[in-house]
Image (cartoon, rainbow, N blue to C red; front, side, top):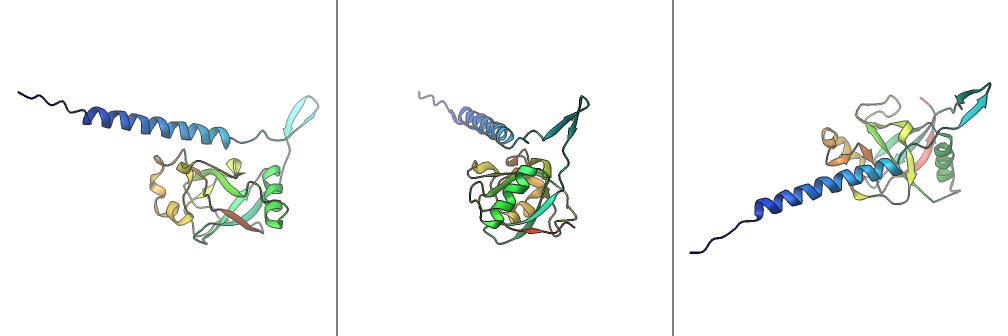
Length: 167
């Protein structure tokens, strides 16, 4: 008599568990690396005030040559974006941030936009947040789960091409 023990259900459970742990670790790394930097503050009369920065808008493209507008609200990111567009720097040339699943008036034709408070720039990022603009549009209902965990989007082929006027 031969008794066979099947380990497939256990293997599937372990594989599923490691996939979930890996996804959670990736989201944690994204949240840590893309966490908003502290806003500049001014001290006066014992109170703390946030320095006001006028938003700036930049057109971005990716490998598909799709065009997408990114709103920047942080002084460091605005200056870095201007340096990228002018050619003053080639460092951290790709865009990363958290998506908001609704259209923005300044970004017609798309059903999503970046949360301006979360936008930063990077040289290298993990694969779990990479996608093209049209793919995100076509799979927006899946974003935030296994696809673009935490709604962080970091298209590896993203490039700013120009600053555009405020709407």
